[in-house]
Picture (cartoon, rainbow, N blue to C red):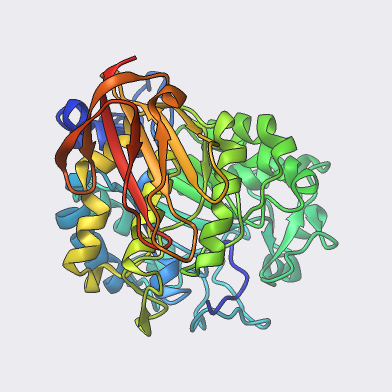
Length: 462
């Protein structure tokens, strides 16, 4: 998880415009903004996540166990194979502070590594460069040198071990026991207590945590146990957002897990750049089928700097190397098509050390990525029972159309051009095949396999 309850489980007109540079900038911050922030120079106002973030996260493939050597090996592969397509944020997920972490389960007797102010520190046995209080700075420097950005996972609250030892809160006369809310606990991970934000040192604690992350060179924090129950945790969401602003570094805040309530859309958009709309998403068709409605419901709230997050892409080798994704090739294409047309962040979860050609091709298709990064007016089209469709516009004025077959038999879904406010004839391009497929005058259809998808670009008169 990070949000992790233990689990077993354009086109033509845009491809040239969506360059490696703009994609990387869209993933969180421009490299220049990051470098300026690290140097401590004055920063121009920079919008975080102007386009859906793209990257890799360790949870789906390494669970709680990733080491420094594995992280740097993976980051190197990411630089070589995914960064050119725009995947720029490299994130180490949960339990990086626990010496005894072994898999997808959480130990009730875990004792995290802490500094003298109750802040989580990387386990130096797994991350040798973190010894002597150096934290993640050395790894962040290596990741930045590759042209990537560096993210980490954080549980909400203050470590229970810090409370047991009653460690001081940096810059205050208070201690951990003064700010801990022992009634606010995570149901699936026992590492933390909530922070009582009514106490004057509550904000000071979060300020100290994010100031340290800024010093380490962190670009994204995936903050867990935040979105449910949302209202109860809202003060800590606000505290994290405020602490980032005070840190002097533009750090992207990603909240998880879901379901973030739709009623809290205005609040979450004001304080985070990404927020989960579901619990952990894994490679099972019912979970994928359920994401359609969630993304439909959240679409009106998406836009620059605010992205509803359908979770990581469980593709390729997963689960500590024990298996490959259970999604069929058709379902894998549906994942990428839906995440792209709905503009969810694209965060690869599979083990890049075992990245096969088919999975790589799925991830880096530039015409599909252009839909995710540069389309607008994204919306579902409800035209027929048993069929799902989405449409969007390209910056060049073309229409994107995604057709899905959620049924148990091959189908030929389609829509009339009038439903898309188009007049025939229109030229049709298959974005997955990256080729033109003909012209239609009144209706567009596609052969779609079971649980599959088609992604088309339509060029014609509106």
